[in-house]
Structure formats: C-alpha cells, structure tokens
Amino acid sequence: MQYLISIIIGYILGSIPTAFLVMKKKGIDITTAGSGNVGAMNTYEVSKSKLTGFIVFAVDFIKGFISVVLMEIIYPNEFIYPALALLFAVLSHCFNPWINFKGGRGLATAAGGTILLFPYLLITWIIIWVISYLYKKDILLSNILATPLSLLTVLGKPELAVKYTFPQPKDINSLILFSVAGLTIIFIKHIEPLNEIIQSFKSKGLRK
Image (cartoon, rainbow, N blue to C red; front, top):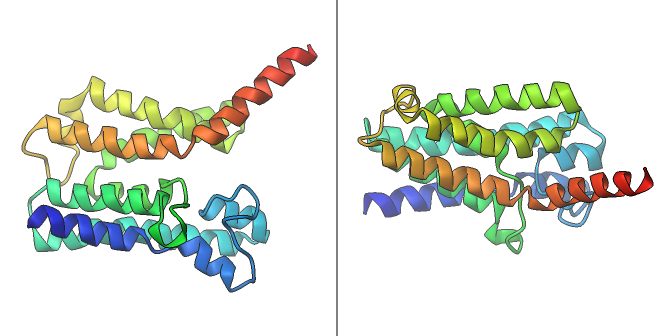
C-alpha cells in the first residue's frame, strides 16, 4: 500500500501541466508552439518573457519538491517512498496524461526532488552541465551530456552517492535503480533534440 500511495501522490503532482496552463491564459497552446515542449525553456522562448519562464520553472520545481516532502513526512527515514514519488512525478510531467501524454523534459521537477533526496546527483549533474555549457554554449547539448555522465558518477562511486542521500537507502541497488530510471526518462525526452544536434553536425560536415 505504501508503494501505491507514493506512486499516486507523485504521479498526480507531476501531472499538473504548468506550462500548458500558464500559456493557455495567454491564448497559446504550448504543445504546438515553438518546440512543442511543455516546460520552462519553451515557455520562455514562445512568450519572450523571462518572468513567465521562471514561473513555470519554479512551479515544476515545487512539484518534485513537494512529492519528496510529503513522503518524508508520511514515511520518515525511508528512501524508497519519496524516491518512488519523485520518479512518478517526473514520469507524469514528461508524459502528461491530461495533454495527450505530451510534456516537459523533467529537469525542473527532478531537481526539485533531488535537492532534498539525492543532492549528490543534482550537484554532479549541475557541475557537468556548467562545464559543458561553458565549452559549447548550448543548453540542450549540456542537458544531454550531463544526464548520462552524472549517472556514471553514481555507478562509479555508489558508496559515496549513498553517503549523500537523505534519508540513506537500505541498499545501493535501490539508489542505482532510482537513478537509472529517472535519468532514463529525462534522456528519452532529449532524444529529439539530440537527433537535431546530430543532423546539424552532419550538415556542417557536408558543407565543409
């Protein structure tokens, strides 16, 4: 029952289509505007408003944050329940049941939960992202690189990752499974921009 409660709470919170609702008030269907991504970055690019983009990011961040907080209150000192809630919050955000399973890329929602539950992963992801962005100045490419590379840091040093997880999981396998599942969902949502980046590199190569 605890597993089901965690899944349902996370899924419901994650499924709030923030960008869709915010842009709907402006008379814009974000699922068909710009990149069609239902997240903060596309909201900013379509609306041309930093404030609007920030509001979407903040609410999506809070969805993940609350998912973890609620589970830590209901089931204190347990890793698996807040981890499940966050995982399903990210899943329903990325594949939103209210808007034909379209959604965002999950980064804000994931960050909102991991800042409490698994800061090691979040900090590692941010460090890799910053290094990549300083080198290439490409947000999406930095997202794509940081996602699998941060997972490798967890797989490479799982004992260190466990040390900086709150609450600590009872075994390393549950932490690894959570990390793999969450980052896989996020990476899947970046396959389309990854293909676009690859095609761009190919076209540049042909022009040379």
